Image 1 (tube, rainbow, N blue to C red):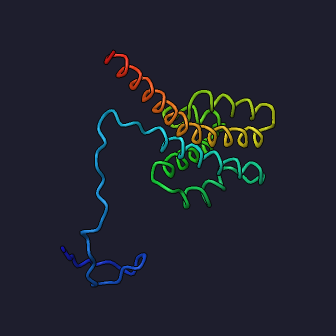
Image 2: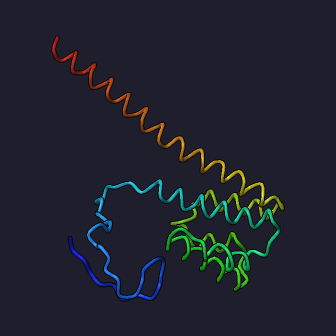
Image 3: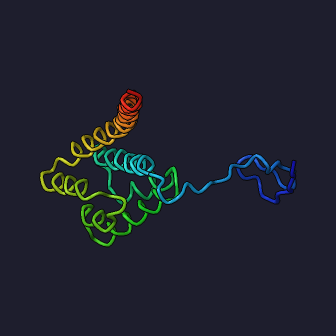
Length: 166
């Protein structure tokens, strides 16, 4: 067991000069080039959708709401960076749709088009609510679709194996 002396100031339970076990720290393993990262991206988009929708439903100023609440409570650095750049673009006078269009790797095109329709019609709160529901359903269906496809491929493999022995 490797013990390392950490010199920190009382930060989240760490005390200056105390020994801590660093062997239990999680290591990040590279999943390879074919690893699908769909669900983390959908979770990130769902978080941003819920938070922005909450601001719109509360009729709160978007820039101030992002600054005060969202960027400080962001669950990861990617979301924090997206929210802070959205805030900067909104401060520069861009609409929410224009700011989102600058980040196509985070905000899909159809998503931004729905936000644009909500801005134009005045029903942005309803659009955020519907997008949130759709993203929730996408997460739920993603697991069931993969399970169904695995089951179907297993049945086909068994049938092919039975046919090859006749």
